[in-house]
Image 1 (cartoon, rainbow, N blue to C red):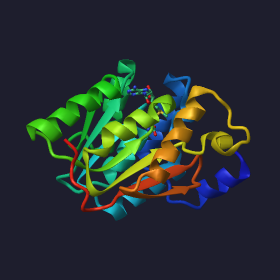
Image 2 (cartoon, helix red, strand yellow):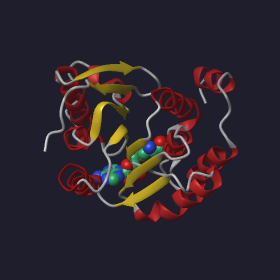
Image 3 (cartoon, rainbow, N blue to C red):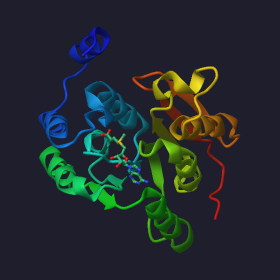
Image 4 (cartoon, protein in one colour):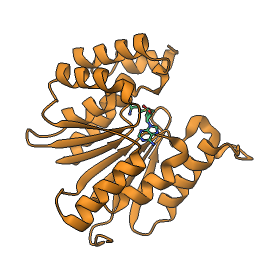
Length: 225
Ligand SMILES: C[S@@+](CC[C@H](N)C(=O)[O-])C[C@H]1O[C@@H](n2cnc3c(N)ncnc32)[C@H](O)[C@@H]1O
């Protein structure tokens, strides 16, 4: 742990026991613990979501459920989180984490490729009207697919709602000159350009950890069907 991260951790409210369990299990049971949101950013997104007061949240990229639990903790009693994950091997760990955190009633795990799941959600929300739209979406899955997620998620977030995307600085690669041409960097760079140039939103990149892009749909813009 570097000195800055150690200081931030020691001077932010400690994570809950359930989040500590998820973090520990992630280290023991996966090889990708660096993907975890972690205590500092986890606390930040929980407090940000609480301030924005969404009732319905959509998350793309559950991994072991750390950020899902943080977001669910910010929801009111009757709030709801749908969280999308492609890797079905993580399901048991995610669901146990939800139970330990006491959010099983609010958090719904949807296993499958997010782009396919989003197509179904779009149909249910925009065409059939069988599912309510979201107040907030948190994007944290495949960096190559960020532009697709933006296009697919935009219409199912309510006007005035928020899209928050993680890792938008991608370890500084998006502002290197020349910009590296790998598909992850290009995906994130395109996503940040889309948000910055979209007249339907206001947006700001917050340099917390690997960067969060906070995007607000300006109210008054109707749903596109
Ligand atoms: C950075 S991790 C998410 C971390 C998580 N939000 C957290 O804070 O603990 C990205 C996750 O997205 C998942 N993922 C990647 N591509 C996906 C896709 N097309 N659909 C759904 N999930 C995907 C990966 O399997 C991985 O678990």
